[in-house]
Length: 126
Image (tube, rainbow, N blue to C red):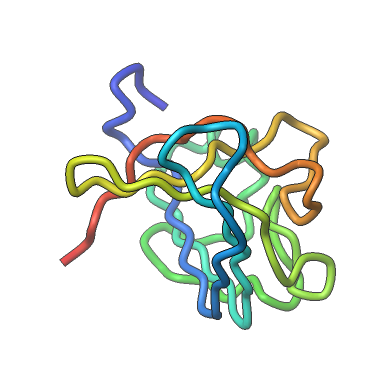
């Protein structure tokens, strides 16, 4: 929530398969992938109650991973509602980039909402 994006609000972890589709027609050196989800987990990373409420994450406990596969939470839909996401992938200088989440109201579970720009680089947790 900070300008430097150093303070996380939550983490998401998914378990499932993925499939390469083709090279992106929109972005150079980018591939289109479909990520399948057998399981979905979220971990709350902030104790700021206003942020937690505004993000719709009040059902999560701080630093405790919660299985959200069945019911979903906030903008993370249940597996029944969304068992796959259409995304983009790029690797630049050993850094992995996935697509930015679509604008509010767009469902990344639909191919038409596949991201057209990158999100922040993923951080590898050791």
